[in-house]
Length: 482
Image (cartoon, rainbow, N blue to C red; front, side, top):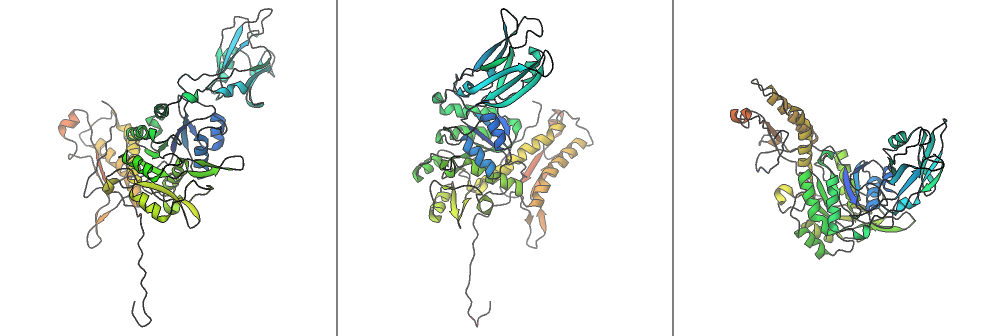
């Protein structure tokens, strides 16, 4: 099959790793409005509110996205979950023909939910003769306006990118300009998101909206509980992403341990406790930890690279008001040993204090940063090598040399930044640089080239993570040497 296929494996002994580029996140949850059949790229809370609305009285998606941006996240993809048979509001506008007006436009709410019952379509004369101005209002505020529209076809075209309404031509047979909608203010019917009928599997099914082309990142379904863990991990494994998992807000240590035991994967980490955020009305609200954790990860990617565990000093909160449960140092050590990553208060600040993966293979995947870096290598390698698909395999090995150079161009900056671990001998002389790129005869036989298959192998040795600093302080007497 044509294309680029990348696989990863563990090699014990001399080997090497890769570099990180994106600290983006992917979030699934409930919202007042917004698309549920595709993901939306969000670059700030204002972006989120324009598409998905303000904080509703239900769900934790808003709090998660807000915390992500408040704590330094830069970009996330968001998708909304609604009931299977959710409905959208609608209104049909009449044309200006008399004495019998016909249907000219059907205006549907762009997404399901009761919010559309607060939306109105205002039709007025345009600034140019024989045109109309159409505005969309929500809760009395004008949220979108298009002016000087001369035909139903033009109206449909102008509103094609609207996040509030979908406009369809209802087929008025009146001659122009009588086929334009009549002046007036028209209220859409209320839809129903049927969120009371949403099942755990609906959240997992929504992950398909995060298509492979969006790249690597951290994925979460905040506030839903352990029932989505398996689906999250499967999605991340298939798409080279990291799953951020949490449990219920009142989960006990035993329940956290059971959640860990149910997942053996280097693609996921479990985080506790829930965090406390501003509820928007001057109070405090408990929220799942994924938004904060995703932001800490984004800092690590931006400031250092995908190999940087975003815990400790780099994981200090800037905005959290508190924690739903305070863990002591002993608690944190016990839970960390059980592969639960803890958020705790240290030296007066709240910080992420763990970055454990849920893999039982502690040697190769004890920390999520190992898989995070490998994911980045897979995604970047696939993107860079795509240009060589269907390229001519020449006898002078120019194609193989070009592929080799591309892969070196990916890993060498990571090595220079400290993400790979060079091997040296007893005299300090370098044995290898922490990576090995092979595109020659060791991986490409004449037969494989004849079968139109070009192979490359990238071996990496990942730099380990210093999870503990051990310091010995020795008191020396006044008359003793140091």
